[in-house]
Image (tube, rainbow, N blue to C red):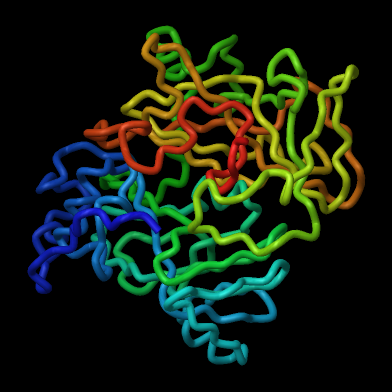
Length: 401
């Protein structure tokens, strides 16, 4: 476990959000006049103002455009995933499912592969009308094939906290490839906060359009090659030794030891992964039910005033699914030369039938969104930036012997 960063929790337990609430969706207040994803310095404001509540919140949880969420003291094993719906709480639903409680304090507990767990988080929210939230798995979580989603009370969707949401947060956790050890304080997912003006309250799409992306690319390259756009930046899979070297991917082994997700650089790759060698025909046959780590052909750079998310290019494009941890902080891929310097790592699972992937095949797209303002420190300048400048790279838990 790493040393704890300085606490950001307000010293005054009566932290008041009334002033911001009274401003309405368009009020400036301590958040300025800009709208979009909130940077780390504004997330710190939210903590001080009591909009994000939790024991001993610390600076190490805050990334350039997101907040790491921590597992609480208990997990509940259940037989199936669920959403509470508009009229019910998560706790109320759990009571109807006869869950098995698991203690996560101390050295924690093992979450078994293939099982579903609901875990109350240490953080809760008291959002104003002008701020909503979006969650996703952390990069390391996705690369371990740990299916993780955020649930809030009275919600019909995963990974969202509506405007003005007040209440607890829960993580649904289902390890798919490896059984894992977690404990209270383990960080599997992260949350972003979007500030809206009065015209944006009912919008669902906040992505930059193709015209603006082309203009941005001319000023500072977003990728190291041609800018291919299709409702976002098109990403293609790299299966060539010329791009990645002799190893172009990894396939998860089916029978492994338990993996402690809080141990960094502790495990040998050969104990958990089978390397995939490049083929002369630059193809890879995906076997049903198998989990793969691959990489994009494109190297990219996320400017400091933007963030990006990887999303499907088309749900009907093929018999495979990329498991999208998929959020890219401002500054990801930055190099001294200002040329794009990091590939996207792809977490791929095949569906019901074998499927042939070919080098250069389209596998996803990056959707860019504006920050309310650039973060004071970007990705690579903060603790925990394990994937800056990455090529094909497994999660931080594995030694590169």
